[in-house]
Structure formats: structure tokens, C-alpha cells
Amino acid sequence: MQFLAAKSLVRTLFRGAPPEDRKRGKILRDASAGLGLLIVEGRQYPFSLSGLWKSTTPPHAGMVVEAEFDRGGELLAIRTVPEFEQ
Image (spheres, rainbow, N blue to C red):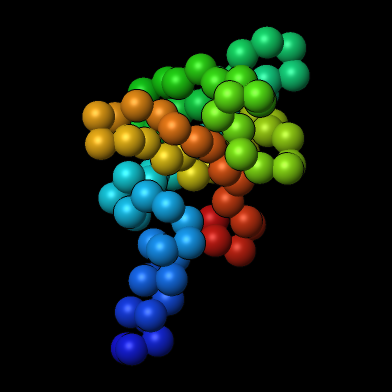
């Protein structure tokens, strides 16, 4: 039990925003030819590689991602989710 609590604390400290501001989503359109499109909880968000995309792996349609939001619900960052966490 202590291990899980410590793991959660480390994630929060080193990844930035608290977990409640992170949600899973899916890439609908990659950003190779203009704006990409992400869907999270039924809402669509346009994004660009230079703006919100924070992973080294380029996005592709169907990719599961983690979207980070500020307290006001604005999209701050998008990161890939490793396959073993999906």
C-alpha cells in the first residue's frame, strides 16, 4: 500500500499537473498536413505538433494519448500513452 502511495506522489511531483487534470483521449487526425484533431470525453480539440504535442513519437489516427488540462479546461499538452498502460 505504501508503495502505491509513493508511486502516486512521485508521478504528481515529476509530471506536473495533478491527475484530475489529465484525461485519456484518442487522435482522430494526425498533424502532418495541418492541424491534428484529438477527442477527449466526446469533445474535439485541434492541435499542432509545435504547440501542444509533447512526445517524440508523431501522432497517428487511433493513437491513445493523455491530455493535460488547466483548471479552466483549456488543453495544455498531449502525450502518448505507452501500450502497456492502455
